[in-house]
Image (cartoon, rainbow, N blue to C red):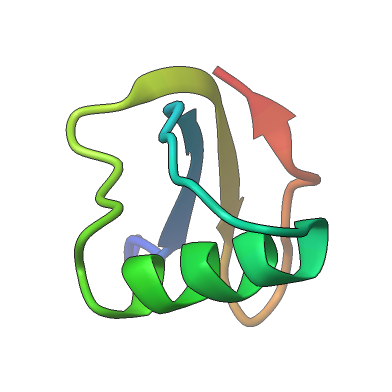
Amino acid sequence: MKKNIYTITIEETVSDVFYLEANSLEEAIEKAIAKYNNGVFVLEPGNLIETNLLVGNDNESSDWFEL
C-alpha cells in the first residue's frame, strides 16, 4: 500500500518586551514598527507562548491543535 504524503504546518507564538522613548502613543507605534522592520527588535529566543500544529494532505486535514 502506498504511503500518503502529509504537509505539517507549525505555528509558534513568541513574545518579548522592549522599551523605547517617544512623545506619544502614535510615535511609539511608528518607532516600534521601524525597529522591528530594521531588525532591532528581534524575538530571539523570546518567550514561547504557544505552539500549534496542522496536518493534512489533498484528501484530509486536521484542525489546528496546540502542542
